[in-house]
Length: 212
Image 1 (spheres, helix red, strand yellow):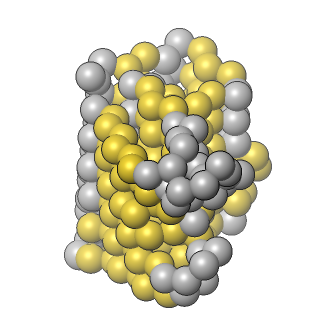
Image 2 (image 1 turned 180 degrees about the vertical axis):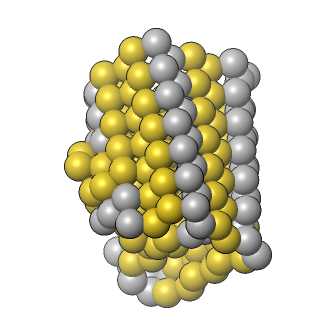
């Protein structure tokens, strides 16, 4: 477990495989409480099939809980056939949760290349979530840029949301105030952008967005 801890400065990663990059923790399987990061986070990839998971506090949270914690630094990823990028957490899995937490840094997911099944997810709080988010918020702007190659099956398949890019879990008593923006070029596109959620297949209760 991690409690009453913090980080600052710059956290960066570059590889040809899979990156889990966070301002405080790269891959989380435990409990984080009353902690924060002011670090600027960046993650760059090269090579076919590479994946990027980056967050202002945690890159990838497979299990455990994040409570009463926050991140204020910007988060930027460059390149990736599958990317999850969030102001607080990049990817939040089904056994993981966030409560009483927030992110204020801007999120940028750049050079998201085409992948019909995967693509990229960018959110002010969480990029991709199958877990639980309770009483939390995001205040940063979210920007994603993707390029699809030509051909009948090409797709950028990007989801951008002020709070969560792609939600498959539960969200309650949470909100977003930032502005989500998506830009794409080339090929066919299957993209979704929302002030609160880019693409939702989960449950949302008493949540709102005020961005534009």
